[in-house]
Image: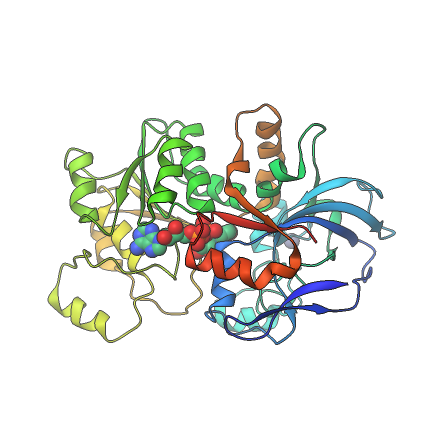
Length: 389
Ligand code: NAD
Ligand code: ZN
């Protein structure tokens, strides 16, 4: 089959690889209908996650048709249309049975490496490096889905491939960002008007937010935030974000600050730090936690910072003193796909959510490298490109 393979930093090629097969009786093979780029892939493409190997198939936001099931798969049959969660959960360990699917003890065959780095292993993710299990990704004609009964969700009748695609990742991630933090009446600020940030904004309203404020630098993305997500907008390249947020909240600050950017945050020239020493220190190291620090600074005293933007470093310059003295709560995590997808498909079917506007480009898999370049450059009004292998 054809697949889009990682071959080094910003080197992607469509290659011929062998078709996947059932390796475990709980597996299913899916013929991919749509497979989209995600901000998380950019960390792989841009070389921020070191445990990639040449030839790895990337991609983890996808849907498709079941073409084969293992002998222990009970809920699926050939021909089912399914959307698949990007994180893999066994369904039986302590964490899966407590609805913390991205913390699964058993799905990552390379658990030993994660245990050394994190203390405990976390769940595997499709197409997301060997640290996260080394599973082949979805930018391919077919994919092997492990623990298929847990990971595959039938697409309700009347819902198209395009409408259901983002229930795989961007939507549950944004929803989780809000679910972890937002209470009725909250003012919610969201850094990053990408697929994840926009879904967090929509979800914040569902959780009862009183106001939603979006922060980004791309006007076309802020326009989606305003029109699709009814957010007030801040262009961080034009104003001082901290001052603007204070101004907008009567001096108190947002109740909830959501980081939907992660480690590839562009530093804003307007960032201000409390101490000159901190400033000097930061200049000596790559500044990968710019949004996280800004969120901690901007959050009202006693508020909550919710982090779904991905960080891969083991040590970041993180303002623990500010967090502690302001009595902030921090929430974070890779999303618990299996916890949220059924509810979100239900909302899609009722017409209460429609993430399809994120699909600005639908291209053949052969254009994979160009698709990632466009997405990385935020060119041509791109929110997300989906490949239809
Ligand atoms: P995206 O690249 O489409 O969007 C990121 C946005 O952040 C861009 O619009 C960019 O302009 C903006 N940005 C950059 N620097 C900023 C700054 N200083 N202030 C405000 N905005 C800034 O990516 P996406 O698909 O929306 O993903 C966003 C993040 O969520 C990524 O880190 C991704 O890895 C992560 N993610 C996490 C999970 C999870 O399970 N936790 C799942 C999917 C994605
Ligand atoms: Zn598990």
